[in-house]
Image (cartoon, rainbow, N blue to C red; front, side, top):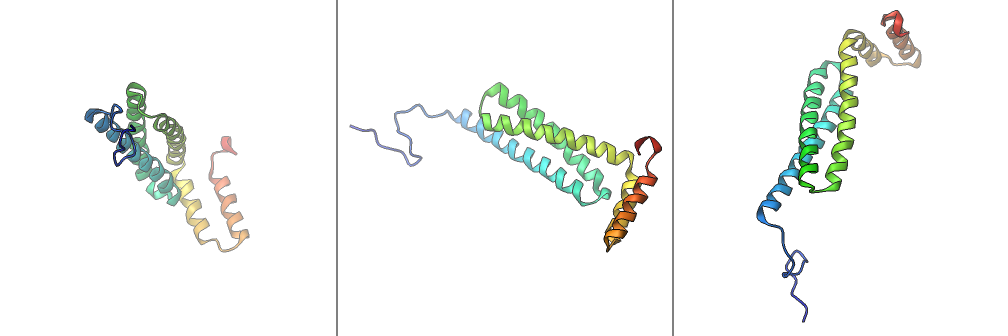
Length: 143
């Protein structure tokens, strides 16, 4: 005789996960969700305006901390390969974002002036003039 199915669809006679394992998996998934929100939030805030660089930096640091925590947790507990892959991918994005934020912080005034100019540029010629002005404002070693 076949064993009856529980509402989740698995047979009752299989060894279900313990409550501690379920709680651990739930905690890992919640940390992963917070990590994804921090990484995507940092990326989208960085796209807004250079004046929000502090918020992008804060979200990037939070993403880095959560990513390392998740990486350790996923490798130690061997819970999910998808979480491990997503964490590694997110950490790569976070490191790139950290580099972009550092460069933006170094050239904050130049980028702010360029964004202000580009915001008011209505034609292609005006946008080109903004780029030329940005190039002129950069140090000679970077041209």
